Length: 132
Image (cartoon, rainbow, N blue to C red; front, side, top):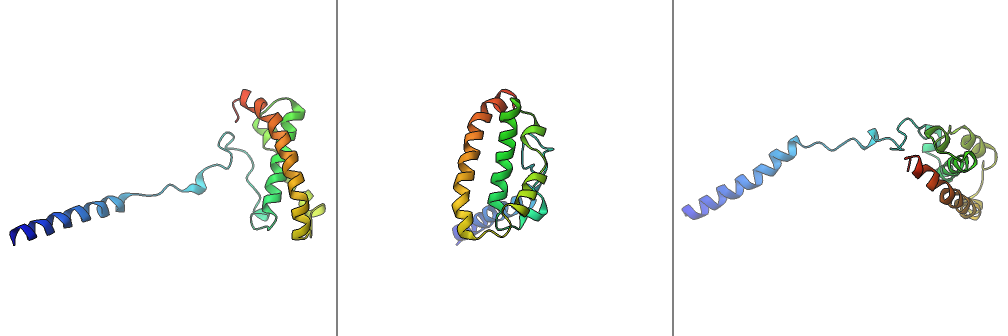
């Protein structure tokens, strides 16, 4: 009987400790992390793009623009690699406005291929600048 009481008390204390420790634990706020840790002041994705169904297209176009800028400039700075979203927003409103899912699927692979080509060429430039 005493053995059972001691076992129950020991079990209760073991179970209670993690609960107490967990009550003081707070998860980090992931929203506070910058989108681009190498360039924390880089422009954030506009809210108008956040809810878009073509958000992946917007992100791809933005990355392509940044890598193209790096390649064309031959240097990598935060301002060059992470430009304003204005050109992407304009392209979405004019060139890609109202495209169907089928049209999106037709063009996205070409856009991704172009982005990858610029990334391959721009990565060493940004690495040398410490921004990769």
